[in-house]
Image 1 (spheres, rainbow, N blue to C red):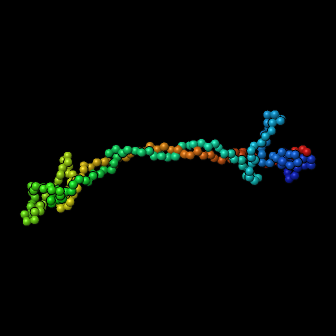
Image 2 (cartoon, rainbow, N blue to C red; image 1 turned 60 degrees about the vertical axis):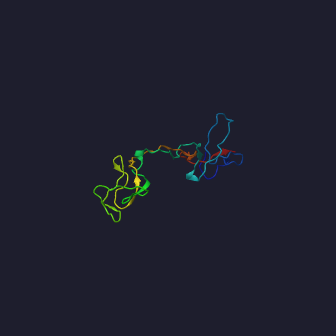
Image 3 (cartoon, helix red, strand yellow; image 1 turned 90 degrees about the horizontal axis):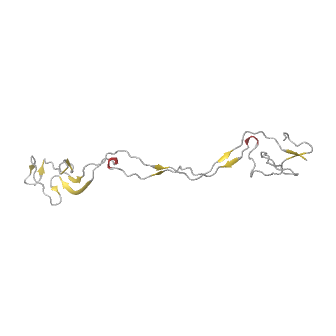
Length: 182
């Protein structure tokens, strides 16, 4: 090994010329026997204080892709709500489809127009109204309220496509030139 600008007289820089091996940008390792020869597939890269030798890691699957699985909500997890459906109901005429509502106690009835005043109309389901309560509007039947807005969870699977990394494996170094006696 040598440090300087030119090889001494009778010596040659090991650059692959004049019968020398090309040892530029390579570390030296010794084989098991004197006749064992070989070299790595690529040399170091970079200039002076920035030499690198990168290796690529094996491709492996790391399971980082996220898939949110389906979750069936229970009734308690649904937001609180009611359903409106069925036949329409009118506050002053009762059922709009050939239904006649009898006079309610405490209500007044206009004989000239046939209109009923100050009446409260309710159709009950398990002791709670299924028709919204207000005078002189058309209503739809409403179911009992359901849902409590409780939280729920989803299971998730995390996966990622196979990939590799380049890793610089150069230890601290000091540059010297390899020379051979001619």
